[in-house]
Structure formats: structure tokens, C-alpha cells
Length: 416
Image 1 (spheres, rainbow, N blue to C red):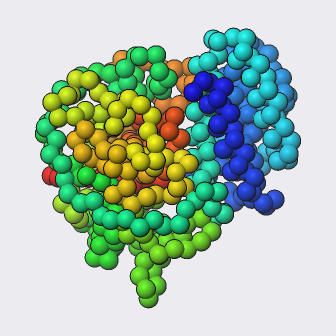
Image 2: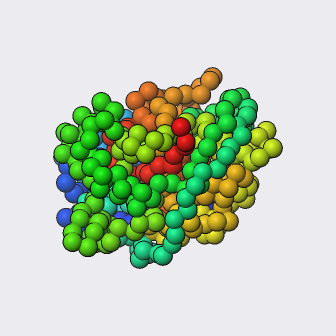
């Protein structure tokens, strides 16, 4: 897709999501893990204006004189965003529209901003994904297109992966990548066994029912402290009645879909399940090796698990397919070269590794994207059901602190 098409696709999604908001929901409660939607929408316009219209200029913003003071996320502390004199929703959306009209005109005149237009589109897509888990956190209505649970089956077992030396990270082939993916470098991976699919609700429920949240030996010291502080006895959004486990999904409650991947679990919870089950999380290198290579073909990596071309709903559960996770046996056409399912889409997968730069890291113009978070975030791979297909690839690195259980994260395991 062209940069302009990417921008328009992201904006259509933003407007669809915010159209769901009722008057009192534009600001919402003050929480550490979400932004007020009214601020976040305005921030999207500011980001696009800053990167697509103001690069190389010292002029003040052309559409709102207070845009920097309101929406510059590097300068406006998270806790201040609820108390700012934010414009009303209609005025905020007019600001977005004015910026977008100017960017469309600029794109036709200056191809040098293609990189920044693509950056802005992907930035907006990431915020759209964040909107969906914000709506979940706050119990708002489900986005349009969110399906009912879909019948499926378990997909158990491990795959033997030979290991070898491969080039981890993105290749410099002209396609857009973020600075933390740069650049490919040789990494040796020892032979290992990886689960064919992510851990399911049913598998995770066995840990919960066995008293896993009450048994300290399964948890790291940090994880146990986190679990104790939050008084957790099961995953976020789970509840139990006489008929068994249920979970809240947006503003409704449903029977826990046993064959969907477990979701909304922190790295600490994933690690605890692994200790209980005698398993481990994959390293980041193992995850990429399993997604991007194939038996006897470790030198020429695939861009996606199934190949170079973008997939469809038979290959990956990404934005626009079901609006929720599918069972772990779905999307067989998207299996990796090693026969691993759903390496892309459905649920982000925690890895064992902390988020660090690759050798020779050079910061991209958007300085706040990667560098401030090195060292205290864990890496996730693979995308989820709310991730736009144009955004994701085998080398993409997501990153969150290990205590985050509000995001669309689950995990896949390896044998010890």
C-alpha cells in the first residue's frame, strides 16, 4: 500500500473506534495503563503534523497554537493528560481532518515525506490496537465486527527445530522497518523443541485450578511480589461460577473459550505457568528462527511464516478477521516452515528476553520509539487479532514491561 493509503486505512479505523464512545467515555478514568481517549486522538493529529509537515522547520504548529503543549507525548506527563484544557471531541476531530488534508497535499508534492507518512500511519495503527484493549480495560462496547466464540480444537505437541546460524533482524531491502529491528546479524541457535501453538485457556486453567496463583514456588521473586500486590488469584477478567470459568470480553461475559490462546496474562504469569508445567519461554532468537526459516533453509529468511506475500484469513487472524482470538487450530495455511501455527496474529507472544538494541543500533528520527525502553521491557513477537496486516512481519519486536496484563499478550513454550 502507498503511504497515503496506509494513512487513510488507519484513520478510518480510528474514526470507527471513537464513534463508539459515549459522552462520558472520551475522558474516562485516570489509570496508569491507558490514555484518556480524547487526548490520544488529538495526539494522533499532532504526531502526523509534527513528522509530516514540520520537519526541518522551526515554525509553530499551523493548526492549533497549543498543539505542542497539549499533545507532545515527550513533554506531557501521562498523569497530566486528564487535566489539560483539551478541545471537545468535535474540535479534536476537525484538527485531525485539517492535518490530514495538508498531509495529502504534501504527499503529492514531496516524496521525501513518504517515510514519515508511513511512520505516522503505523503509529496510528498501534494506537488503534491500544484503543481496543483500552475499551476492554474500561468495559466499553465491543468494536464492530467482534465475533462470537468460534468452535475449534486443541493443537498440542512440539516440533523439533534443528537450529543453526541465521540472520536475526530485518534486511535492508527498502521496506519500512523500525530502528529496533535493524539490522540483520548472525545468531547461532541450538536445536530446540517448540509448541505447535500458543498455550490455551484450557491449559492455563489447569494451572489456576491446581492452586498456581497461591503457590510461591512457581513464581519468580518479582512475579510473586507483583501477584501479591495485586491480590490476583486468576488471570485478569476471569471469574468462576457453578458452571465453570468465564471471562469478561468488553462489556459482556462469556464462557471461557477453552481452545483459544490464553490472553491478558503478564510475563510473570507466563513464566509461572512454564515453571509449573516444566516448560520455558522461547528466546527471541528461537522465536524468529522458528517463524522465518524452514528445514534445510536457514539462510534465506521468510518475511512472514508462510512466505513473502501478505496473508489472508486462512493464514493469520489479524485486524478485520474476527475481532477476537480464534481457536489455536485455525489458520493452518499460515503454518511456518517448521509447521508451527499462528506465529503471526491471534495473540502477541511473550519471549524470555529483555528488550535490548541489536549490534550497531542507530536511533531513527523518532527517538522515543525504542531507545527509552531498552533494558526494562520484555520482547513480544507475532502480532495479535487487533494488529493490522500491513504492520506485522517476522522481525517485528513489540515490548512491554513484564507486569502488563492488559495488552493482548499470551505465550508459546519450548521444552526444557
